[in-house]
Length: 469
Image (cartoon, rainbow, N blue to C red; front, side):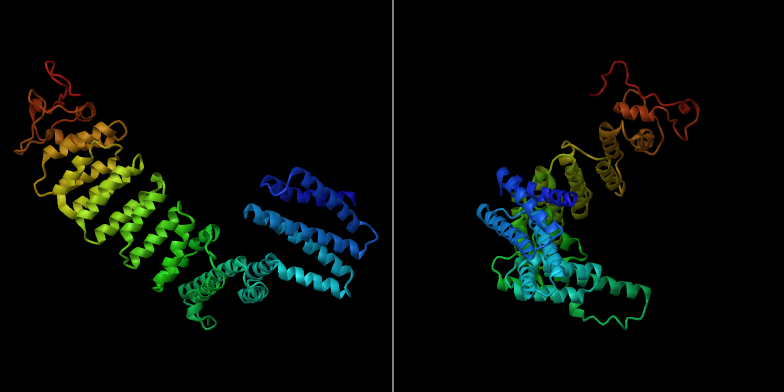
């Protein structure tokens, strides 16, 4: 018996440590709780059992629960409920089960058990989850939630879990329908109304909850992460059926509660863009105020794409220029490539070259950034060898030691002349290349030229001339 009691006391240690760690109870109070719990455990584990001992045990645990709730309210601490209250509720439920099994004819004991279950919504939620996840019965889970709401009509936690359950149920039905259609099977038994597949029940729960409980937020951060992980997600579901007002309401609630959350702002801006709201630009600027610079790259790109879609070339360029100043480090590489692509799409090669010139001293770069401007040059009807050499040499200065292909691509340019005659660029009037380019081109022979010209080109600088820096 002592081993059983010791084990049950040790099971309490995590919740008691949490109570002390968060400051709800002092160390002396925790020691007193352990001593009292040990006495009560001995009484309900001994050979001769008395109903009063079980009732005293339950009453002590309920009093402890109420004390925890009062102290939570006083210090305004609402976290770690699952680790603390949940385990106490389960323990009380276990004691009630033992007592009701021992004294089956005691009506008062049964009524006390029922009252406790009605009061603690955690038990309702546990039962509904069991029906939904273990028995795969969404109908039974729905009935349990509805009964729980009759007993606890103003409990936000019940509404949150019921709302989540209906979203999961709608997503499950949609996936089942997709599997039926993919397998080309008879869907005669699949008679669910279209409204349920669209998540209409979740929408009704949401509206009822905000009408009954002022300030309720069904989408707290944990629930938001679960909901947005569902495909297509709650906001996407609302947008699919043109419920722009409701989608914006959910998104605004998220950004008000969690101003530094990038996913929240992305969802809100998605709603504003799809609803063609005039507040898109204002919301982008507001998001940058609350978010850290290092996570803002996706929003800058979204803003530029939205501005380009609105056919405002001047505004789009202004967005890119702001973004280049705001985004630094490795993240800026992607932004520069996007800026160069947009310049070529909107203003052709001349615009792209101007953007390249404006960015060529703002590090860091990527090889792809240089390859883009090289490709744009090659696409021109009058491709200028001088420009191509300039781009390759610039790229070699940055990446010649890590990308050998750049040097290989540069070799043919070393032997091409504007008049069309192949000739080596070696000589007194040669254009001096960087060391990487010389190393890449020095071993190549001039194609199509006979005689002494077949020897490798000597691109080493003349003795009387200075090596370029």
